[in-house]
Every structure is written in structure tokens, then in C-alpha cells.
Amino acid sequence: MDVSIKKIADHLEKEVSIKGWVDNFRSSGKIAFIILRDGTGFIQNVLVKNEMSEEEFNSIKDLTYEDVIDIKGIVKENKRAPGGYEILVKQFKIIYHYDKEEYPIQKKDHGVDFLLNHRHLWLRSKKEFATIMIRDEIIKAIRDYMYENDYILLDSPILTPTAPEGTGSLFETDYFDTKAYLSQSGQLYQEAGIFAFRKTYCFGPTFRAEKSKTKKHLTEFWMIEPEIAFCDLNELMEIEEDFVIYIITRIIERQKNNLEILGRNIEDLKKITSPFYRISYTDAVKMVNDGGLKMEWGEDFGADEEAIVSNHFDKPVFIHRFPKKIKPFYMEDDPEDPKVVLGVDLIAPQGYGEIVGGSQRVHDLDKLLKNLKAAGLPEENYKWYIDLRKWGSVPHSGFGLGLERTVAWITGISHVRTAIPFPRMINRIYP
RNA sequence: GCCUGAGUAGCUCAAUGGUAGAGCAAAUGGCUGUUAACCAUUAGGUUCGGGGGUCGAAUCCCUGCUCAGGCGCCA
Image (cartoon, rainbow, N blue to C red; front, side):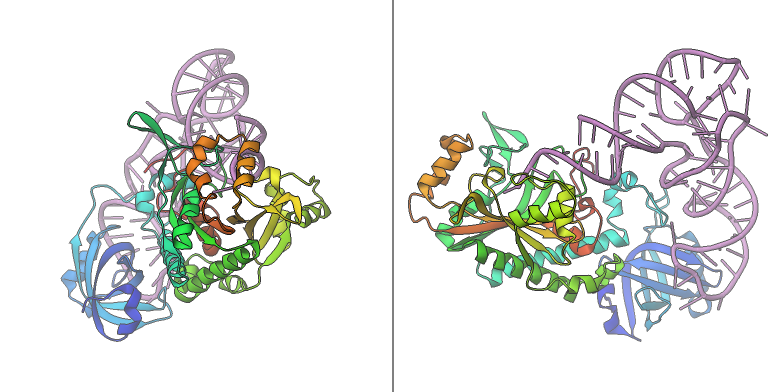
């Protein structure tokens, strides 16, 4: 019976058939071990000389990495086997054999540059497999949460006519006789969506042509951006918290094996429970200064400043109510303090940084026009966005969650470049 | 963009002014429970490019390129 490695435990002591790729093998004369990968997992196969035909046993001499083999054998539980299960092989056949060139990715350490240049092959490795499987589960959890909570998927365009915020670096491309820009956020379009569908989201790639060279930045990354009508800042934080906990709970439930492959401490993840910490920007600045780093009210947090704040907490922390001048034009003023806006960042623990940024949006027409002017942004670029405030405008809020930063945090990997199958970075667009 | 570090065999690294080496991978052989298996043998080099200086350079100097770690930039 053909089975997948993922479900091998259901077939204990039964004969199964598996096709897959040779991930690793060891031979000891009269016993051999082949680690087989079938796309759902990895399993050790034990070949014992007198348990199978001599011809088949001897054919393992021809094996090379990434050969494709067909195996029939009995599923056994064995503590010595990685993963706890192995297959005692009865029949063994090499279906495709490759020895024209040796396989570049080896079982020893490689440098990051080499591995990224071979990303198309590196994906076959165990840790990369585990990371991408968890990424897939996080994406599924995100979509399930949106579905279960009545959000409507409203895809924002990727080709856009202008810089939505007029700031930041955008990738420019020809668009017939004019120019187009790759989207750096779908938010403004979601704000159009909520007046038709009340709660919407988009989930797609976004692009930033910034020359950032850090472990938290990609030039192409995925972001989910929900937008909610009749929602204020406090409700927004509740939703963000509920959403993040939903994702983490799902990963703990369904991706334990892959978390273990990555060496992620699951007990630490289990501590990510409600409520998250909430702290105002003003209090965070005090915390930074008390922590020994000079910082003026009104400045944005640098890497060191952010670390001081996040290291105070063992769970994610919301920092809310930022100075108006360091935040974009669409954020609503705090009615109790016009110097600050109703924006909020969610900072993950252990240095993974900002994984969510959100705000209550300006919904008053005159205030929006005033903010645009103050930001030096031309009204004509925002005609449709301004229209939204002319008819049926209500208080609303939304946020954007960076997928790769979330994947990096939950898996415990050190850099967002391996949280996406084919990373795009300042000096890397191959393969 | 800035700071720091690195670039030597297919890969990961050693050799700091005097004959370029190891482990892994490859090839051959051995081994009945391996865990990145192990053991033996063989083969494997434009020391990132360009220039300089020295009796002599992987090593020192100048220059260019590439990469990494960090910072900055970044809603």
C-alpha cells in the first residue's frame, strides 16, 4: 500500500510502499540505512542483507544523493530511528539514478551565500522543509481566522499608479505609456473595501526598494492587511492579539514535529497567551531612558531602543500612541492628546522586532485634507481615497502583519531570508 | 550608505614572508544498528580580479569586486 511518511505511524507493523528521494545513506557491509524524503517528511529505512534479495541489497552501492527509489517494507517503531519510526526494507529499487554531477548540498556546514545561491536545491533540506511547512500552516491559519471571523478577501492591486504614502522607495516599472509602481501596501484599497464589506483583508506580496541590510528586511515580502469598520484602537489591539494567539495555537497543535526539527522551544511559544502587554510610546521612551539609553520624546525607536523595550517582556508588547510627526498621514489623532496618533506596533519578544503595525484611521474629510497638506502630499493622487470620507465614513482601523517576520519568530530562525522560499534582498535576486 | 570581518580544493576551514594542508564530498576497498556513521587508499589548487613592492607573497601595500555580522534607511 502506498503511504506518505507523514502518516507512517498509522501503519505500524504493516507492509507499506514508499517512493521518494535519497536524502542520506550509510552502509556498513551487511546493513545499510537510507534516509528517504517523500515530500511529506523524512524516514529512515533499514536494509539488512539477509532480509532481502542479495541483488537488491548490492544495488545500494550505486546510490547517490537525490536518487529516486521505491521501497517496500514493514513499518517499525524504534528509538534509534530519527523520528521514532523506520522501515525494515523487503524490496528496494532505484527508479532514477543521478551521478553526472555530485549533489552540491552536503550534510556538512555550508556558508549562507553558497546555500542561498543553491536555494532551489537547499529547499530539499530538512530545516528548510520544516520552515516552509510551518509557513504554509501559518498562511492556512491566517486564512482560516479571516474566514471564521467574517472577513472578506479583497485583493489589493500590485501594480499601482502612485506611491500610496508618497514616501519610501518603490519599484518602478513601465506601464504602456506611463509608469506603475509595485505595491508597498494594500491598506488604502482595504479602506475602500470596508465600506462595501465591513471587514476585509488582503494577503499578498509587497515590495520595498529600500537598501535595508538587516535580518528583518526583504525587498519582496508577504503581508496580511485586515481593515475593520466601526473599530477603534483598543478594539484593534484586541483583534491583533486574538489573531496572533490563534496562529500560534495552531502551529503548536499541528507543527510540533517541524518546530522540533528547527530546535524551537515549544514551551516558550506556549507562554504567548492573552493578554499581551500594552505600553504607550511615552512610557516606552521612559523605559529606554531608564534602561540607560538617551532618547528624546518625539524620536523613533532604533534597534537598540526597541531591544530595551522588548527585553522587558516575555510576551509580545503593544506600543501605542506615537508622536504624530513620525507616523503617516492616515493615522487618527488621539482626542486626549493631539500630539500623538492612535497607531500601534506589536513587538515580538527575543529581538524579532515589529511584526504588526496598525492604527485607527482618520475618517473625517477635513482632517484628512489637512494631514495630506501637512505631509506635503498632492490631493490629486488621493482623489479616490478622499472620496471615501465624503460618503458614509465611519471610524475604522486596520493593521498589517508581516508574514516572514512572523514565520521567523514562531520557528525561531535567525533571519527572514529563510522564512520565504526564494528571498529577494538588496543584493540577491537569484535563483 | 556606514562600521567591522571574510574571500585558499566541489564544500567548510588551516597555513602570517621561506616546499599550499586537513575534514567532508567524489572514486576504490572494508565494516551487521548507523544518526552529519566510521576506517584505509586515490585523485583534487589561476590562494577573488588588477597593480605594486620583495631574493622570495595566500601572507605586506594600493585598488576593484563579492559576501557576512551589525547599524542606518524602512508605516
